[in-house]
Image 1 (tube, rainbow, N blue to C red):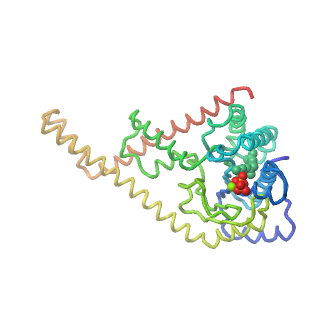
Image 2 (image 1 turned 180 degrees about the vertical axis):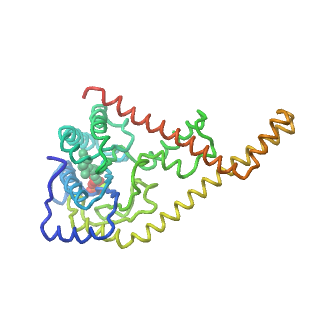
Image 3 (image 1 turned 60 degrees about the horizontal axis):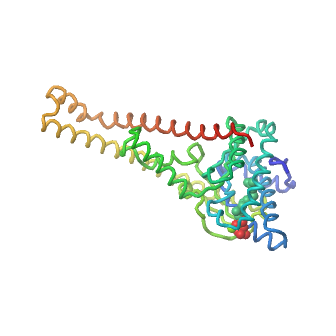
Length: 345
Ligand code: FPP
Ligand code: MG
């Protein structure tokens, strides 16, 4: 089955969709596609058939996102916790993933025409090698597209994502690319897989479970959360519309919350830069006391560090350091996918 289908909505569903388009629509929608196995049990079909119906629903949901001007969609396809399921189920899910991701490669022309950028968030090194190669080829094929971003979270948990970000930052400090005082919320956020994403506006979880299950925990601090009782394969366009309506009702509040978070982040940066300047001054005064540097040189340095512009200049230096660090991290990640994509499937 294709990943991209035409509008299958009835005329009344289209009218409701158009009414909703008069209000703000979420730019980034995240979905926890839960309940495939319970659906299978209800329908008396095999577990994997439940997951297959889940995939069909994903295709439908993608088309709704297109039609409702959503710019980015993140779906929880396989959690690191899911490795604990039976070998049979895990292998069947990976077979399904192989087939569907290969299909993405086959639909290259359509994907590039629709300008869909497909990204995979997660610890892909945990996946079978051949699946890693297919994934990397999909990434390479679609990385220049900018109309709709589809993030497939696979071998993913938020805790793992944050742990990985902390590791990258520690390495950056060790290699003296950044300083301890450069570490703040903004930097950690930029080291997550979602560094090039829009903020998550709306998160939907199906199946009646009211939990985030380690999905986009960092990213969902100013997000409208919608929990619906339907199993994922039963999720309807009406459920989707209700979630958008819910978002619209809370939109103003979420925007205000984001503004105050942004203000706190810039205060955070200024405070950490002030700390760097104070520490630098202390070092200078100690060196002066110990007569480690000659007076003339020291006077100039001290004057520089006492100047009121010192903090502003430290902010600029910090920005420079973190920008370079983050672009090298991005390059490293892109290169990992590129190297993988050169392998044969
Ligand atoms: C959660 O339902 C679903 C998953 C763990 C797998 C999600 C996969 C799909 C929807 C198929 C999409 C496939 C690709 C290739 C992207 P569950 O298994 O936890 O069901 P339960 O909650 O009823 O036990
Ligand atoms: Mg479940």
